[in-house]
Length: 126
Length: 145
Image (cartoon, rainbow over all chains, first blue to last red; front, side, top):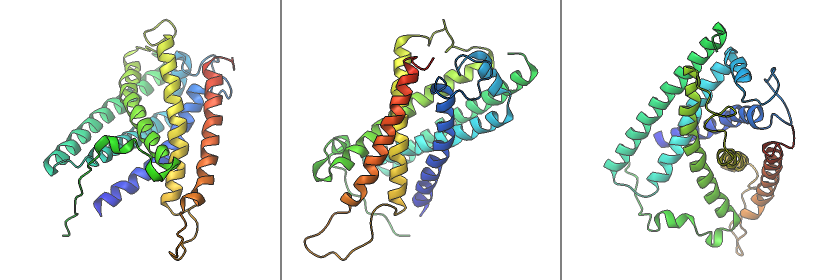
């Protein structure tokens, strides 16, 4: 039952990622065709355009949300693949703990960076 | 509590590589996993690299470390993997929820496979993925500038 719940979250996370990463990909990699959220012109990944987006609360919130759901989706997917190799119960437990700790660590780093970048952009210190 | 019976995965990773009688959907599944693992590897590095902007380092700008053709090409591969994984993922969610698999029928011989009912959805999603990849390639090659 618990695994069914995790699997449902995995699918739901995929739908959220589709929307947020889709937006991210359009902004970063289809900027030559459909320029979005790049008021300074040039590439979407330029420092000026990055600072502009970091200054918008919408992007800070969605970066953190995307970070969380993408880490869950990716690491749960990796866990599923590893479990299919029929590991011993102790190894399964160890894999789950390592992936959970890695996910939490990377979430902490990414969330801190998104908030710090927002503060820098709002203060105009970029 | 009921204990789940475990079955050995005799083939291990090699079990992924053979489509057998499952057909093209099986290869779509293998590619879904491979692209997922590739995206995950990139994403873990991407978190670290983009977090550096909080310390004032924008290592992807012109003249910086990641401004090299090999990384640009790698980034395009990630875009291709994303396009495939996303569109195939939509198909998988739809099928998981019971859409596009046809109505249940009596199992009367000769049995009919539901794979043929699902296949148009696979074809539509792959065409959409190719359109997205072409648009991405157009942009990555700088043709849109």
